[in-house]
Structures are given as structure tokens and as C-alpha cells.
Image 1 (cartoon, helix red, strand yellow):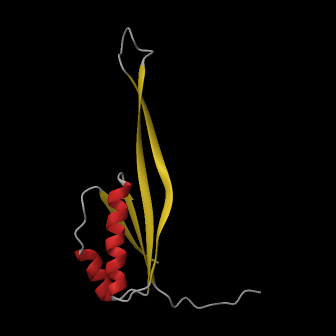
Image 2 (cartoon, one colour):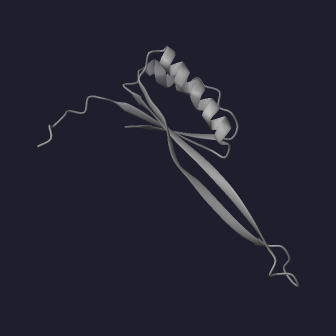
Length: 109
């Protein structure tokens, strides 16, 4: 029978999305190093499955309409969990300079 534990740990889950995985990994490394300097427990970055969006477009609308082009967009996702964040941590996260091309979603668990 599992033990009933009280939920005393607060967590902040930060979800990142980007088209460029190199930029995303570089930015996450900076964040994790910054939080480690502050002595904060960080879980991650955890890579999530890459999302692929594929589009097929006609090259020509009339005579050569059987000829098509295919395009693909890849979306890379990562998650970081911060255990027991303080108010200072939340201020640090809000003050970070976000590079263009990275989407951030912060959720309190």
C-alpha cells in the first residue's frame, strides 16, 4: 500500500518550444547554470518528442497540377521543473532576455 504524502513541494514547470534545437539547447544551458549558481534544484531539461508538420503544395494550378512540393517544419520541445522556487527565482526568470525564436510557457504546479 503506497504511503500518502502531503504535497509540500511547489514546482514551476517551464516549457520551451523552438524551431532551432541548437538555439534552444544553448539557451537552456544558460538558464540551468544560472539557477545552479543560485543553489536551486532543477529537474531537466527533459526533451519531449519532436513535432513534425508536413505540408504539400501544388507547384502549378493548371497544366502541371500533378507536380507537388513538400515542406516540413520541426518543432523541438523541452521541459524544466524548478523545485521549491522562491520569489527571487521567479524574478530571475522574468528578467531573462529571451532570444527570438523561443516560446516559453510557465506553469505553477
